[in-house]
Length: 364
Image 1 (cartoon, rainbow, N blue to C red):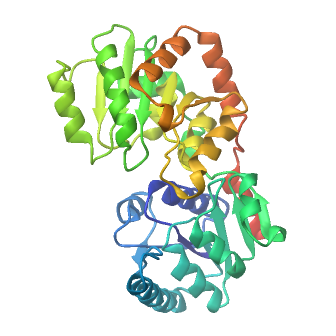
Image 2 (cartoon, helix red, strand yellow; image 1 turned 90 degrees about the vertical axis):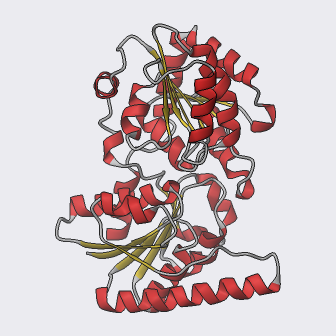
């Protein structure tokens, strides 16, 4: 199989694309895979580390703020279509698979116009604009959540597969993860992160949790701040007397996510589709705090799907305070049986073979 994979901007689009590429390669070692991305996205660094060649095409989000920006958006994406066609005429893909982000539009459209079989995967319960537009050019639309189907127009194309997660998460085990991270096996471990970009509001309240946990024997906090917020959080930690050899570990970026999730007793995070899927396949209880600044409030629906099955506590940002978060953490810390039950519920809340399902559907 010759496959073009695309999806970009954030890890939430890129890592599912890599998981699909890995599934193709595992079933068909002779397959040729080329990743098409956007130069300004995280794919620039992530994809080569995953072992796949990458090329870049122009792309731009849909900006409807005025007529001039609409014209600029159209011009950039037309150039993207032209560049994608040039690349594909040389590569000659059998299939083109997109996992979201505005780079998908020029790539999928170019693939369709050249006669390749095209597919998209929508991770969220409320789909993005690009994927809704691209539905008409695709043979199938893979869905992370069944609720997303209502927002598309061709239900006969829809296949609910769940969200593709990289294989490293399925083998992640608590004891080994804690050894890898140098964390005591009997510690109560909290892992907080706000997605690949970080989340300012979550960081604010977790700072207060950090101060409360500082120096406590038998407790560890892994605090993923996001690169934008890292320096500020480190400054606050130092002013609170928190040193680098304490039980508080502050990270600008989480590049060992399987270990951090597997080591945790409790996860505090946004509810992007990929974050939810990764937390669930590892089987960890979580406090999910949806971002209110996303299309269709889709993170709320991602979180609700797990919370309704008992796998998470859903805490909306408008209700989020340091006092409420700390109290919820205390209650969960004091109730190990509830945490274990939440972990089991989370494990059962999502499909565990999404990438395999996507491969099988494409093969059909």
